[in-house]
Length: 341
Image (cartoon, rainbow, N blue to C red; front, top):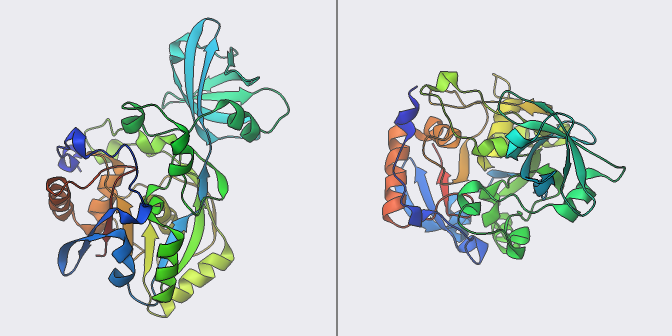
């Protein structure tokens, strides 16, 4: 499909630079067979049914943004994907000043050797020393806010908490599964009292999620890959939800992409551990999920293509136009939508 079919105009004022406080007070636009309705996130228990199951991503964002020097040249790095015990793929700023074999000094005793470049322009970094890389990042790194926020303000101490979900447990993401940022212990208690269960899986979100689609046709776009895992016990419980007539609602596009990667053509979920590069565009037949809670996405992005595949492109264009007119807040720290096809 033509990429420009997924374009829309977004006023800069609709881009959220901080999350709602409290988190579950954010707006929630619900789309279902009955139409389109404005809510807030605390209304979620009344919008779902007893027996439904929400699926969250329990990945934890690491301080993957690094600033350093190669000689006298300033170099920035955003870690993208773990390749090994001490090796990470990274998007490097001022990469033309870095050659294979160069040592980049990130300060605080953290150094990395530059390795091979990939086709997407990223570079392999091999971290020197014996300490676990996670400890090095805690010492020298900062939270890797999305470019549409980082370009407008500096990262600060609040982001260390704001940019983690309440489910964050498995370290490895360089971007948050932001739909889950809206959830609080109080909201989870209300959902449980309404008979709505939840499960978790792990997908380590990579910086590739922010890469723009630079081609004119979706068939020519190469999707980034991310590592994920769903264990056997979780798949058994999710299959049981479906067998009982409950709905599986993915919280976030990361959860959705992993659930669909692990689903068979017959609609059964199977355990999964590995990379997924699933690219969902209109025409895709969803095999397992029954709905999605997600934030509002960038124009021409793979994520807006995904929600268009779920609900229909024209319907999502209308929903986004409504959200803009009603001052919904967009992107990672923004408001949410509940999509029930």
